[in-house]
Image (cartoon, rainbow over all chains, first blue to last red; front, side):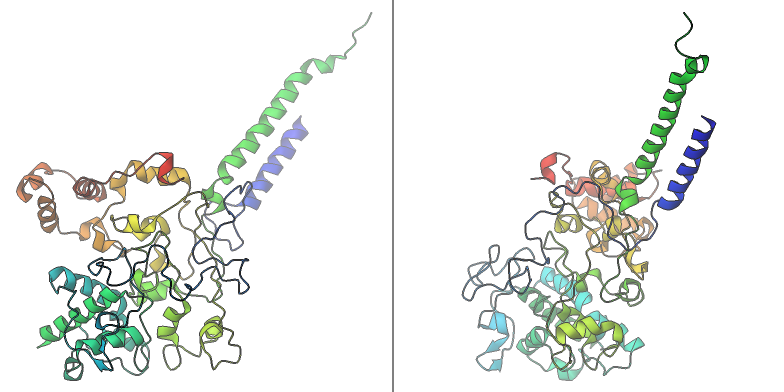
Length: 206
Length: 253
């Protein structure tokens, strides 16, 4: 019996040392004793798939269709916020910032530029634009403090001020120079909100 | 007739009982301590294809969580950014574009790169709810539950690791006492926010707009109470009518 307890004590100490305390950092996938149904044969967001040849779970919509949960633009849903992301591209001013081949001036008629809209624009601007263009729009974002890359546009400059709203919208959508396109990250309505907020920054700078 | 069993067997049953008892206790103790997400998942720090540094981007540069995780407010799933989002800053001629660490990004995005395949970057998933639990990010961040509550101070992590157990009982702890988590919605992505950062006057002003009491009355009622998370959370819970479900169907369909 003495031997048993000695061996048990050694075993307990050895196990404790081998397991280590809670919260230790490790890089192997976590241990799972029973993983029943934790991983089911269904498609989760941003996961790969072995059904399709290219292994991608996320599929592009078939041409001419709209995914479930999305809406056609201009079906009376122009006022919808966040929850109805509209990334679908129509060819009108609201979706492109263009009239034919020309940048449009002013805002699309379905938008009301009010305090709420500007607040939304401010929030989105501070998330998406400040790293490069800076909080006040002067082009001195945090990136310019650390890296010697060509400067970002000064948004409160007369040059940008003279641009029509459609051109600002177009630039957010497609990028310009070193700036990448933000059409996949910022929804159509939010892009217009940012345009309105940039106008507010320009007015404030005067 | 002599004894069938020798004398030493008298205590054998007791000894076996003691030994098995001790063994069982040890096994249970070890399982208790280590067979829980607090042990198996907390601290999980996988190596990512690109050693993305959150403490640099979200901490030092002060970028908002939603620059990359852009749909967390709209979607149940908080998205990992597409390679295009990385490319917006790390494309040719931009920040650190020639760093060898960004090789998987060039493979995905740079059509002039010799190894270009267009294959997406295979980030390793760290936080995983089981497939039978339907967690919704949007409903939490839109009701003032901060990222930091479940993910820890990611803005101080050079390499992100699993900070909370994310077990069911851990979820329920918060669903039973939501006042411990609620904060003003515009501070949700501010991971360093403290209750003391909130200005009491404007807060009571805001609450007064949500109830039929005036700001002064609300302030009066809170005289002598400590200005802390529980107080703010309890007010917000009432103002927003937050009733976190505790039934099974809340998370399991």
